Amino acid sequence: MSNELISVIVPVYNGQRYLADCLRSVLRQCHEELELIVVDDGSTDSTPAIIEGFAMADDRVVRLLADHGGASRARNAALDIARGEWVMFVDADDEMLSPCLLTAVAGVDCSGVDVVTFETTGDPLDLAEARDRALVPRHMCASERVRSSRPRRVLDPDYLVPRIADESLNTVWNKAYRRRTLMRSGARFPVGISLGEDLLFNLAVARGAVSAVHLPLLGYYYRRDNSASVTRQFHPGKHEELMGVNDALQEFASELGSARLRAAAGYIRAKNAVSSTRDLHHLECPFTLRKKLSTARGYRDSAPHVSVGGLGTVQQTFGTAYNLVGHRSLFALTWLLAAQGLRRRAAVRSA
Image (cartoon, rainbow, N blue to C red):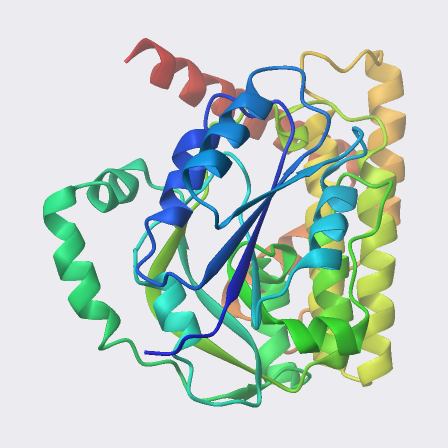
């Protein structure tokens, strides 16, 4: 078993509801060579007391205090002091699942690997199973049998295109990063934006990385019911932020000279236009109908066409349909999607 130190970074702001479960899920990992850096981003609830309690009970917990500057600034502060061979990120309302995740990451036997990815889930049943004490020994035994995929070249379009298309490149919590790779690439989280910062970080990492492997291990639970998420609200600047991030993705694709990467970036741009249009139907949106329609036109014009060549079947189907509809049809279709979403959430609350 490798004795490599792993740094796990948890930024938190007013996270008293889920923070204790999150920190316990990290500290129960079988791999004991761990530093858990928890950054309190100016919380005003009981978050500081929760962090203090964990730090007093376990000297692997490192506390950082920050003014309320957002998750990007908090993560960057933790990166400045992280000492581990590997660096991982956990959101304060999520949890690590398999107790052997860190053991498997540290056990990657290729020293040239820069990034390790693993399986994630948003299914509460998977979380309940992971918390079942009777299953922990089974997970521990499995840790000795985890074998990573063969190393893949990070800048290979065959590796990047599906990860851009399925948006797994948009997150940092499903990955472990070699710290020397982060230092070599100079990757840091951009401060001042609330959407797409993880993707920008991963693009910076990719420029300095050589190879990546994947672990067939269900390692992380992300919570879907966080109503505080900016993606569940009407956010007036959302579309502009998403387009700015997509501009960076388009530039990255152009640097590599890959038509398939440019097509994948264009597909994501169109998905962002659809998402922004759907947001116009949020109850908090203050626009008149005329203003909503004119805004929808602007969103549609920001992603005029999807090139479907080299994309998967799902992306080709979406792109073909998107290319056929104008802003009024898109506005009507997203109204139907928003109404269905409201009905589903109402059914869940009443169940």
